[in-house]
Each structure stands twice: as structure tokens, then as C-alpha cells.
Length: 137
Image (cartoon, rainbow, N blue to C red):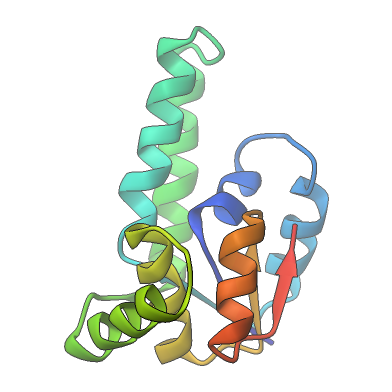
């Protein structure tokens, strides 16, 4: 099964929280994982915030970054191409989502996954409106 996910779902691969087990299970069974190019900096932002808050030490931070890098090397990274930008604009015109959420949705639409994972309720609704099969994790 081809899956795409936004940063809120991807973060659950690295940070233990509700939905982590489900994301790990789906990813393990996926034949291909598609990620918008903005997922990497968004995840590093999450890791950096956790480190600043004292919830991660330097070694944990570096381990998370390495795990992310390893996973990105195996994923299909969807660039911000003209078709992705066009779909993002359509998403923004039709749905009450933020710019980065629209980019994740548009990337998934262009990738054409069997399933789109998100932990964001509003983003999930918008993704469904644009024709994606969504699971909220």
C-alpha cells in the first residue's frame, strides 16, 4: 500500500504519543511512503523544540535526526513542483487550512496514495474534500 503522511503523523514515528503504534504499523506494511519536501524541516523544528524544552538531551536529539534521515532516504520525497503548487492553491481556495497543510495535501494528491495519514482533524477533512482516503492517527 502506498501511503502519504503529513508532519503531524510522521512525528509519531519518533515521538511517543497517542497514535504512535498505528503509524509504525502502517509504515511497516507500506510499499511506498510519500512525504512532502517540507516534512524534514518541520520534524527538525519539532525535535529542536523538544530539546529546548529539556524533553530531549543532545544524544536523543541526534538519534532522532539520524532516524529521520534514514527514513527520508527510503521515502519518496515530493518536491514543490508546479502541479503541487496548483493543487495547494485549489486546496486553500476550497478549504480552511494553513499554507503548509495545503502543501502536504497537494503533495499527497499528486503522489496519489492509497491512504493519507494525519493527526490534524481540519487537514484530514480538507484532504478528504480533495479526494484522498484519510486516516486520522
